[in-house]
Image (tube, rainbow over all chains, first blue to last red; front, side, top):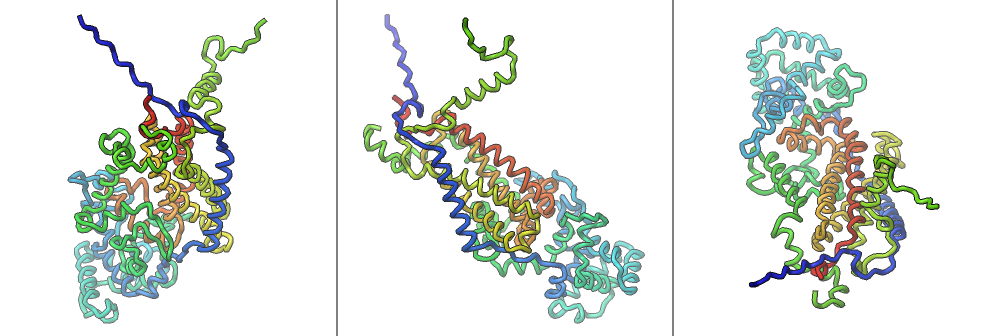
Length: 316
Length: 210
């Protein structure tokens, strides 16, 4: 008869099982706090921080009036980026999907924005010239098809005009659109456009969704950003204005936008977000993933960290 | 006559003693603030955990100072600009230390010996910190905020969460930045540190088994 003697289970040594030496945790923390504070003060004094003023609608109108007119026309025609965006602003686009899963659609239209209202509401709310008032009345009397035809035709004509200059547009049947677009330009120049879009009847306007959508529908904001190397394909998601480090911890997220298939995909944002979610979960649960968790054993960087221990314990 | 004090209520339902016992069991006395460490704790890499916590405190202090003056103060005041600079650079240092700490713990395989949750909470703290810093950029009310928000909205909208986390709404982003996310980072950082103290510093690879 044979008997099996169970192998004695090997005991795992805890931190408390090792020899110790005196150590002052509180002193180390206080020293770290002093050093970090001094470093922070030194860096702040030496390099300050970037603060480039926000673009105002007035500045946009003064520097790029043709862009304001073209953007206003695109909002009326329903051809701007926000007009065709889809959820959460409207139903005019399908939005992106992640490997066929329409997450953007599932989010629903919860911040409704009608792009023509980005022009009509400021023009209606504020005291306008009689000509603009008459143009608004003509717009409201017209059929939806006529409105779209006017705005589309004017948008096409602006695109063909030298420098997009409204004064050089070929004559055509644009209805009241030119007057309305120029009316919005005048409002922007007056400095009243932000307030109208932001407050919408609320004294404490604190939501810039509509004014930012209008501004980003134009070309001026992106032109300014690209001139500062902040475009999406210029590693812009992790950078900021001036010679400052920005958000280097977002390098991996930004990296994907620079390479195919993400850089050429219409679903780039959804794909990058999906990929980053997977990578984050891999990092989070790395201790449970065979192979990944073994990398530190295969590449013995730890020999440097514990070189004193390994020197005195050569068998480990 | 014995004057021994009972550790729990007569019927064992005293919540206070239960909590005290639970705390003592989680981090036994002396282990929370130890005055001795294993001899293998002898490397500069260990510094980055404590410097990360120190930088977090500087971030919170400079952020609180900024909050005193309000959202637009730093645009119009030299002192406000300097405090904003303190906030910015403390955040940069915080991330430098945290990333060095993370890489150090990775190469030491610090999840060994029932420390998986310590690693997981560290990664959650890292991700939450990225979100907190991101909302800071959205709350600056300057050109960077305009550009970053109009670009970032597409990513959030693409996965269907842009309506609940509307980066074009600086009021909402400011509240996330100064209340919700710092609270989350603070809580998870405390849990992380408690777990570190509970389990002690991970032994060298290969030295755990006798």
